[in-house]
Image (tube, rainbow, N blue to C red; front, side, top):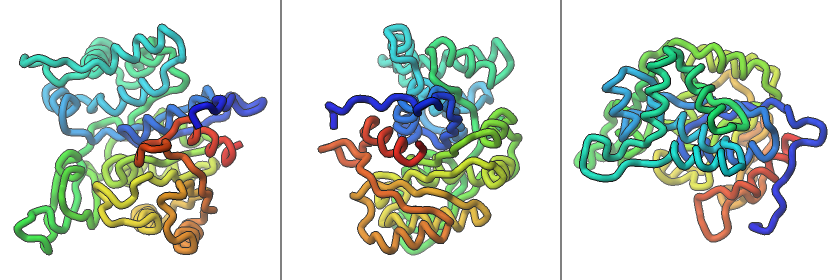
Length: 324
């Protein structure tokens, strides 16, 4: 697959409007593929991270956590020496033993620009222009969120007990099984530009990404959920390559779809895209997809020899076949 020619923009439709929702490495994989297909990509990014560099900056400056926003911008950078150089600058992480240890330079840059401009969206747009980004990056809400989850077995000493766990980092690293998920505040201030992007999109794509801390939170922001229901765009869910690990330990592909239906009962899908490796019971997955209004499309999107890693060209080809 490495010898495959990168797919070009849609024939006559390089401005096809696609909105991708998620966070972290999953969203980065989706954006790396989507920018091969269209110049009009908008990433709507989770803002609940409370760990590492993002968590420190969020606490110290009372700002949105910048890390997932930074990663999305880096994924959309222009394929030029200029774009790649600034991408590497943004992604550089300080070593050493001082106060800068662990900080990504891009996180510091984004927060600095926010302070100078006093406008989160303008600041992200400015960094996007610096990178020559083939698209736009927006937060899913205008204020930072906290993930709250009911988890069974969070305390290894009480494996059958459900406890309330707060914070994205603690939820994502819990050894237990997530029973339900929520956000605080429950009705956060919306990002108007993100709502507009969803409303004017041709396609909206959710996933891949950490299911309960990167994908599902978008469905819990009331204004954003309403926009996803109301949009005339077609909706695609891209299932993870390792559906049974991490936050969704012991899940099957069909369990993800049932979880989606439980968290967003009013939201219908058009397509569920899955790698063959996660479809262990095609009939069950197809039935669960139909329950949310979707057609199941099975296509290879994983990197050969690297389980759990998306191949950007394979994913772009699969998305081109679906969206085109």
